[in-house]
Amino acid sequence: MDPKDLARQLVVEQYPDARAAWLGGSVARGDASSTSDLDITVLLDGPPAPLRKSLEYGGWPVELFVHTEKSLAYFSDKDQKRRQPTMMRLVGESVVLLDRDGSGAHFQQAGQAEVAAGPAPLSTSELELLRYTITGLLDDLADASGDVRTALCSALWQDAARLLLTGARHWSGTGKGLLREVMAYDESQGTDHATALMDGVRAEDDSLVEEVDRILQPYGGRLFSGFELTGTTP
View 1: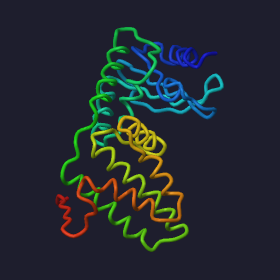
View 2 (view 1 turned 90 degrees about the vertical axis):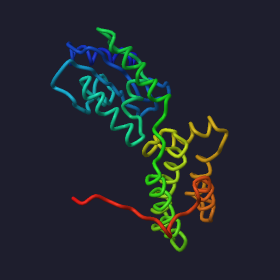
View 3 (view 1 turned 60 degrees about the vertical axis):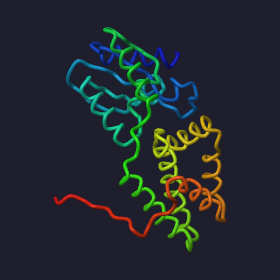
View 4 (view 1 turned 30 degrees about the horizontal axis):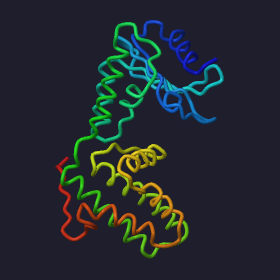
């Protein structure tokens, strides 16, 4: 059975009162692999929601996200604050499986608009904290080797990628999603940061340091002396 039809069948069977449902992720994008799952979001009028559940259905692994309008708004707002559009993409970049009252199309279009608008700009304190964190990793990397170097490189490319993306008001991500966002940024800007970062992680030379300094440069470069972080009293 076509995975879209299978996903629709699951929703109808398990959530007969659903107002809307969407199939997102790699299957909806058309780049699914042999290990991909079905990312299904369901909209209900009321409880039980929100719910995240993993299961197998029709030979497919399924990630099921059950929401109300209130919980959709809550998680979209949370994604805005962390600049990672997980919920917006799951619904906005999707195939509508079910739409009983127009909410399927409405929330899909709203998600697309939020993704297209991009995240809020970094505040001065957020930018300085990223620069300071990256500077510390670069200093630690200077005399590191073996497993310590591998661990530092893993953290460094991700923090540098987040600065690259969020500094330019482009969405960020985690894991393979972060790399996918850097690749999308490169495609739109005609740059090669994804390749340079990954080549630098693998190389036993200073190429990663050079690439990270290249990313830092538009924001004032490395930051240590003069950095301050104020907090609130608990």
